Image 1 (cartoon, rainbow, N blue to C red):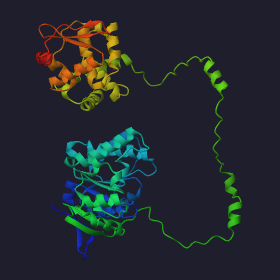
Image 2 (image 1 turned 45 degrees about the vertical axis):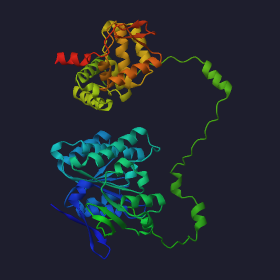
Image 3 (image 1 turned 60 degrees about the vertical axis):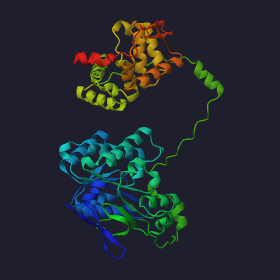
Image 4 (image 1 turned 30 degrees about the vertical axis):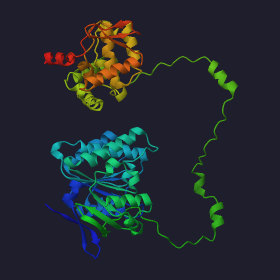
Length: 502
């Protein structure tokens, strides 16, 4: 079903229409400096398409909450927990409700976390509820910044990941992203590159004009026309609008934003200005005057030495909590069981750590493991040790504890290989083959496994030698142990063991 959305007029007063069905499949990017009319354009698009498609607006300034009065959008106040916002987003898709996520009043980092949680809930909705949704994100550079800013890396990664899912993988889930930004240079390239339709408004910087002209397929000498565009005038291009760059003037809207551009009014200074300033208001005595206390002077050297020499007070006993205590031993046993189950998959060695970690988190939720799950660095460490799984006697030996300490100086991707070799040396087992070491390293290439052994040897961790039968022996000088001779060209022992178990 083809639905033509009236966006305004083109040159010669011809109507400028936008194919809504094509827009849902190809997404839209709007760019323009502050005051160029981006929010007006988005409001026109939302008003015209409201009867035809479900809508979700990520609104950092609360400007689009007025859509609820005429078009029935439900306003979702973002001052909630991230888990609650995720559940609300899932119900929004289930019941097909048009909503405005109002982020007004939150700081930038809180806005990024709230938007990420809400978009994540819509993205992870059940397949039965993958109805078409027009997802409009105003000021998208806040949620998908091209460079790190003052917010934490965690908040930036969460928000950027949600925006990337929306623009890159949202189409198959019925999510059509419409993003607006002040500058393309502020927006992450992975997010901007997925849009096939463009509406470019007024911009002044040479680099922004050149990039806008390049996106629209225009010659560089014509890029200066973006500087002369009036408010509400855009150059459009895309399969949903026009196959050639087309000047568009956005039409009028039925609702208005709560915040508008400042208007000049005649200014007249009051006659009794001095009395108004210097005469105290009776209500001011009720309101306390809050002043920031001056910073204390830095301590002297004698004070610092006295503090260091002072005896440390005894540690206070932890208060008894009203909540049930977590049995750490039982929790560790559950996590160890999940790790063993995770590595029981024959293809686990060739899956990335990120994929394994997501699978691990899902299994923890299914098993209802108490407490917070291990973070990614701790999971990588557990993964390296779980791939070895030594018996109880070896695990309690001094040599194994020393091997664990040595492995901490290595990166997570090679710790598992090192620990398998160390276990073979401590138990005098045959040296693992190239195929076995390659599987532990997460590759099918035996040559990469041999290069890894050379790298270990160059760092002085082990010594590799061949006997008269060309079998390989790996010695660990720091552990005073070495493996038995093993055929480097032998089969993958891990695959043989798992195949027999199956």
